[in-house]
Length: 204
Image 1 (cartoon, rainbow, N blue to C red):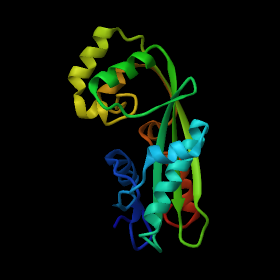
Image 2 (cartoon, rainbow, N blue to C red):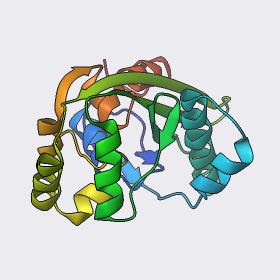
Image 3 (cartoon, rainbow, N blue to C red):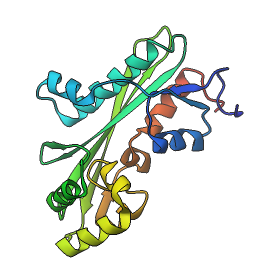
């Protein structure tokens, strides 16, 4: 237990993302990970046409509710991020070739990263909130993309939407970044911390 996180039991993080866990722990929160069992693409298909921000919120809430059913009387947090470029939602690439295609489409263009979170506190209605970051890729040649993919490696490239991890080698792909760092990494952290303070979860 840290001296900052006040509840007796850790925050339940309904996400398998090591980046989100690191962000929370670096902010002094005690975290316990429970990975939700939800069909994200199925939820997206059933939701019909949604704005990217609304889709991110819906996915985050579905994950939070799935874990809260098993972790009753616990504070549960889930998050989701949607990448959208010119109104089109992008998903993780299944292969290096698919990642190369995504990067080619994002090259020299601005895209939005919609990071949503759903916080479930016992006795309260779920609180779902969102933040947006905008990032612009450099004008990347085919050779530059091939070099990046070869250096970054299959797992890092196919494990993230857009084919990059901005906190790693992916930073080299960008010409301009606008938005909170944590939002870019997939968590609207400052909004979350404000809410946790309101619930008496933090020491200051």
